Amino acid sequence: MSQSLRHPEILEIARRDGKVTVEGLAQHFGVTLQTIRRDLSDLADGGRLERVHGGAVLPSGTMNIGYEERRHLNMDAKTAIARACAERIPHGISLFLNIGTSTEAVARELLHHKGLMVVTNNMNVANILVANPDCEVLVSGGSLRRTDGGLIGALATESIRQFKFDLAVIGCSALDAEGDILDFDIQEVGVSRAILRQSRRTYLVADQSKFKRSAPARIASLSEIDKFLTDAPLEPGLAAACADWGCEVVVAARG
Image (cartoon, rainbow, N blue to C red; front, side, top):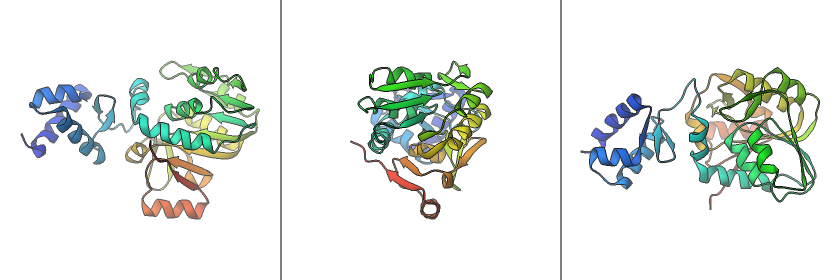
């Protein structure tokens, strides 16, 4: 079966089952794993699917991908972005890291930083940074979202207002062509806005898959961000807008 015939059937299976796997599709079509990986990459490049570990899922417009799936999505890109971000975080500052697998990757790259005070509403970030004895870790209050260890809601927002951070590093669920930073949970959006208000400088970490997604709630604009760290160049129009806004775009090199 040709690629042009496989693609519609792959999408139909994804709609039916919610997810497709490389091995399952290879067996279904009687082709190699490499062929299916190319098919899924092509569909992901076209915005029809989103790659996850071992397969792909349908793009999400109003509901986020499950946390465990997100942990495996674009791991190499997240690691490269996190490393580039950590290189730009000084020792001895106060830092906020918010909810998300990208900020968790940043936390892993901070295990050898000295004299940090890290405030977070991400239980996973706190657990990662326990391994750095030279890092003071403060966890905000809030309602625990069991799906991803995030602390959200009015209590989280109010506790964040008690601080003034040297730097905040945030993630997001999507980024649109106008440079708006988007998310799915309105309670999380409220917390993210408080973080930006209470920070002297702000970095956004987001891999290129976020360019192809949509989410319903607006956090802020890249015009409000000092540095945007990603793994692919922006479209020329958005890149020019970032230059006008004074938002430095850093494209992290993998490997």
